Amino acid sequence: MYEALHPFALLPFPNIDPVAFSLGPLAVHWYGLAYVAGILLGWLYARRLAANGALWKGGQSPITAEHLDDFLVWVAVGIVLGGRLGYILFYDLAAVSQNPIRAIEIWNGGMSFHGGFLGATLAMIVFARRNAIPVWSMFDIVAAVVPIGLFFGRIANFINGELWGRLSAMPWAVVFPTGGPFARHPSQLYEAGLEGIVLLLVLALMIFRFKALKVPGTISGTFVIGYALARIFVEFFREPDAQLGYLLGTGWLTMGMVLSLPMIAVGVWAIFRARAAAAAASAKA
Image (cartoon, rainbow, N blue to C red; front, side, top):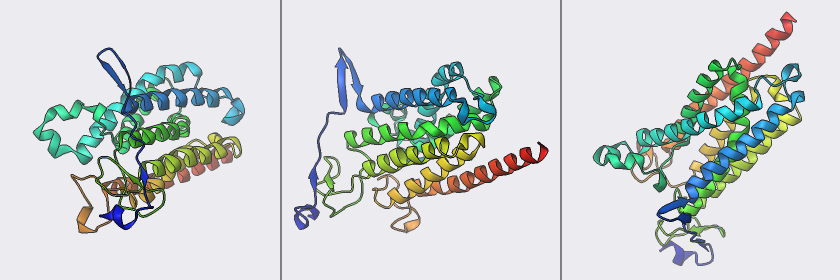
């Protein structure tokens, strides 16, 4: 077995109970708490950004604290519905077709970032138009805080012992209870670091040092590119979903890579569009 070949290249799984605590018959899972923590901390950070007029063109944010309070419910619904529907459509359609009750078993995992991204984007567009907010500024303030949610979500994946990585002989490899008696990459932690911490710091640097919020669309485009690159990189260490495996018989191409590739093009387009719009506005002035 793989662990026999590499007896020192593995760490025991911390075996944390997926249920954080119980209130009578109600079991509160870490997975759900991760979503709540990500959304609430993101909301607090977004309020701070909106309150700092120096970060925005014209010295004032077009998004108020009241807007962000109201948007909290919109984005929560968009993320959960989009994430679950995306997972079903992209990864689990055959199984859900056979057992429709699986569609609502969110507590057992099964959320797609790409689906949640589309759901949140739709929520942002509708909310911005209903409240006369520039859509690209809405995109930017949300994109700036999304890495917080990604970080907590990936940590919850690790606690659940799901979405583990490929076989590994690295000293930090982990033997997951559901991954067989093999040492594997803790790919959830790789994603938490790259999609969460690194991307959050990059966007914060652009916002506070280079005032990127003054060019609407720049932060959105950078986030989309950064996430896509991080996800594609980690996919080389992450075990593909069992029901899909590697695509096209390649032995390396995964659904996560396929869904992330178009995001790079979208992000590049968003940045060029933002710069072109800024240049046009400067020429008119």
